[in-house]
Amino acid sequence: MKQGDGSKRLVGNSIWNVAAFIVGAALNLMILPFAVHRLGVPAFGVASLVVACVAPAVMFSSALSLSTSRELAHGLSLEQIGDSRRLFATAMFMALVVGLLLSFVLAFAGPQLARLAFNLPGKTGEDLGTTFAFGASGWLCQCLMSVPLALLIARQDYARISAAAILGTVVTTGSMLVLLPDRPLPSTFMACQAAGLMANFAAVLVLALLSASHWMTWPALHREPIRRILHVGSWQVAAQGGALIASQADRYLLGIMLAPQFVGFYSVAQRLEEAVYIGILKVGEILFPFFSGIQKETSERKAELVFRSSWILNLLAASALGAIVPAAGPLLTLWAGPELASGARHVLIVLSIGGMLGCSVNVFAFFLLAQGRSKSTALISLVTAFFTLATSALALPYFGWSAAGWSSCIGVVAQNVATALLLKSTFRRVSIWSRFAHLVASPLLVGIGAALLLGQLIRLDGFDVQASWPLVGGLYCVSAIAIFTAVAAASQFGPYRASCREDLRVIALRAFVWLR
Image (cartoon, rainbow, N blue to C red):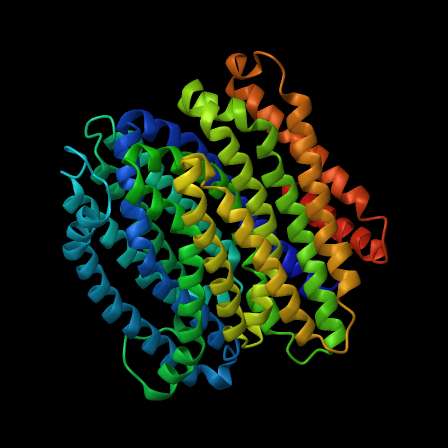
């Protein structure tokens, strides 16, 4: 990207999100095997099903946060402080009223619906009521946090956002270490998750009050702000619904067709992949307010910024997610034992490849959303959901639980095709196919190829049995560096090699300053 204050701030924000991601991913990677060992795979499967049942409520909180941050980003000047305060008050009112309503529905109706829908034999569902209660309370904190968090996002205050996120992760991890050994139940797991969300909410609220109290006020309902929020938010609910189906379809179908332990097996592999994927998504989230501020730029300039941002995120995704592929076998062996590793290794590899392909669309989704194209993002999500659900419904009955990851790859391939067609209609006077080939397809294909090649080279006899955590960590880091180098080298063969070199130089300089 062109050097300047905007570019430097964008990279600086990414680095703050990377810092939060590294801490969160490290703590999640540490605590998950501990939780699975203490709970047992069946109980962990029940907790995973409750998480999947609470997930539909996240559609509302995520849509509210995105639409509120978009509107606040346009009204942070002192001349517009009155409008911003009314918008904030309305968003808080919606979060409070809808949040309380949905949390009560989840707490009281969730257990009964889960018993009817899922295969919960014996005593696996005894703790279900308390588990749902903690899940609902944790989501309520997340919902209430979405509005002050939107204010910090609109101000691009990612240092405070990262600090609050790290605190929440630390509280969750510490709670599990203290509580799970004495009370190894699904409800304890969900209580620890809720404690982390409560800490995150408290930190975000305090930091927002300290840094942006002029834009904050008590909850109240105003007609014009609610219209603006719903205009963007209604399509975002549809988009979040599609994303929900795409991300949770396998858990729902596994819970219906098979015993809870299979949901636990799948969740272990998925949580490994998600720990990295969500971190990359957090890094890309800083692009939303950035893209909201370039609406007056020319189509050529917009295309340049969007595709170069996509290349940077694809480079990160290929390195971070691709490195899981060669480390999948030994990592799962250490995590859950050789028996689970032999069956889940393929699932983890497929999910990682699907995650790499999915990251390529995130930048374009943020751009379309920042341009007010909520209908387009909803369409992308619904296309992804259709192909994901159809693949799961067809593959799982015939190939068993190990086929669950296939649907994510098929879904994101359809997602990429739909996004490319929508971008073509957006940049009608700009040639995008050469950019798409060089800055999107090339890093993904090279990254996937390098990851699979490393996986074949590293699969030595007895490696999984002799693996240790330092060895797996070293393997992951070496693989990530190798994939990063391969993708960076491949970027120098194509029409946009000069811009790739410039982006790499800016990233290296900012990372050096931050690490120093």
